[in-house]
Image (cartoon, rainbow, N blue to C red; front, side, top):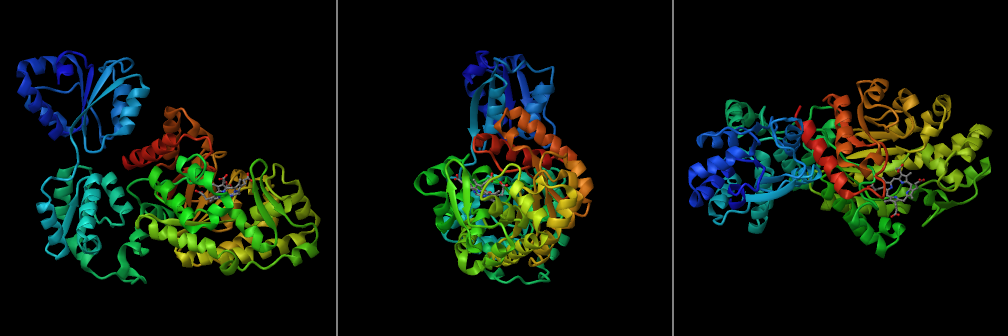
Amino acid sequence: GGELLAGRVDLVILMTGVGTRFLMEILTRRFAKEEILRALAKLTTVARGPKPVQALKELGMMPTLTVPEPNTWFEILETLDLSRKSVPLEGSTVAIQEYGEANENLVEGLQKRGAKVMRVPVYRWALPEDLAPLETALGEIISGKVQIVFVTSAAQIRSVLKVASEKGIEAELRRALGRVVVASVGPMATQALQAAGIPVDFEPSHPKMGHLVAETASRARELISQKQSPPSIVFPGQSDFPSSASARRDSVFLKACRREPVPYTPIWLMRQAGRYMEEYRKIRARVSFAELCRTRELAAEVAITACRKINADAAILFSDILLLVEPLGFSLEYEQKEGPVIKGSLSRREDVDRLMEIEPEESLAFVFEALKLTRAGLDPGIPLLGFSGAPFTLASYVIEGGTSRAFIKTKQFMFHDKGAWDALLEKITRGLVKYLNAQIRAGADAIQIFDSWAGCLAPDDYRDFVLPHTRRLLGGLEPGVPVIYFGTGTGAFLELTAQAGGDVIGVDWRISLDQAWKKIGPQRAIQGNLDPAVLLGPREEILRRARAILEEAGGRPGHIFNLGHGVLPSTPVENVKALVDFVHEFSARR
Ligand code: 1CP
């Protein structure tokens, strides 16, 4: 307060109405009202939404700037960037009336623009001191006295679950929430609910309390009867509610896979669990990569930690596409410098015939164990992806003996003896069908197939030597589980890769998203496609490019945001988080 009155603040951002009133109340305890108004009139005041505007009006003041809907940190920064009424941020002191969980994106964005940030935490979403009213309310939800529950912030649902778990009534509460209408104020609260495995039944047209109450009330009868009609399909295991697949059926990620409308664009990143993350490096300092993959507790831990840390909409099993080469009859080692080294002779038809049939249930049992444990530990609303390499990409690794640039040996093998080539890919494909179906049985909610190196091929060669095998693989998977078929460098023949099947086609940055979508057709969902190198920075560039991709997707249902390839090890984790937050918030504005 003193700083404000002494003229040491240039700009003040008012986040909430209650906070603004409370701030004024504190100030009037120490200063005369005229003094406060005079001081405020000298600075730039930014009101995040209509409520702080109203609070200022009560004082007889108008804000210098107001922020448009949906009033997130992003719009605040955009308003400041575009406005000529504001003081320049460079070198200025900005006070933020903070509420609830402090918004780090806003603070960082201001600091990036050269402002000194002063936080004025007016109140926080802490647990109330007196828990009795909350406990009574939870009791009424559980006993069936309540038909509609309003959730008005993301923090709220986390507090409620915390209290419920401390009281030992979390399971009961979750079951009860499955029976009542859950109405969420907006995309952030919805996201928190879904991450907690609580399905959301209604979200109003604007993320405002008034809209929430009025719109829910006008549709109450319909919402309640929808909720009470028994589901047409009973899923096995639904009795153990949050861990059953029904908790995820309506997740943003699975909805996007099915091209259904979503409240915001889901995002996950290939290699989201990897060396760029400190938690991962710490574990890798203790155990080798191979051991990490084989120890289910560690594999589950890195997958879950990564997903939570960056707030992704899906997790991916922690494993590797190359593990499959061992049951095929090769030896595999991950060398520090050269990358993976795969040994075994493979040059003639006889070599192919000598390779073993892959029996994943025996040789790769640890993968399914890791998958089950990951599922058990993951937030119930977050879908878990299983994965494998595609037949071509795996064949290229065993023929080359490791990583390759030009895939000369692979192509030589392919052109030299099509019979041997087909026999090799058929053998790999048979193993992959069993492997992926076993992952689905172990609990994978979706499958991604990595054809990382198919882009080295000419379109005709892809069609003749690869497409039939990939198509057989995709055709052999259990129906009902979305499949993402990902390739890099395949932009020139996406119409062919799309012919292999798959509900979602993953594309890299070498083709624009809208062009790619034209090639695969509107009947497919699309995943991509930010160049992973963009994540190295700077921050503004990351957001600018992410925005361009979202604009190319144009709000059409069926876009899953991802990189065009895996996260690079030198990527700052803060940049990844900023990307995820931005994609959620920017796409929620449509
Ligand atoms: O700690 C380490 O040094 C190991 C690095 C690492 C990691 C983190 C490897 C070695 N594999 C993985 C995990 C991994 N690999 C995952 C799960 C983690 C996640 O995505 O969050 C997945 C899905 C893969 C898939 C994978 N492995 C692909 C397909 C995706 C892609 O990047 O194209 C490929 C090609 C591999 C092979 C592989 N695994 C690892 C290395 C060094 C390589 C060789 C890459 C190359 O040939 O350049």
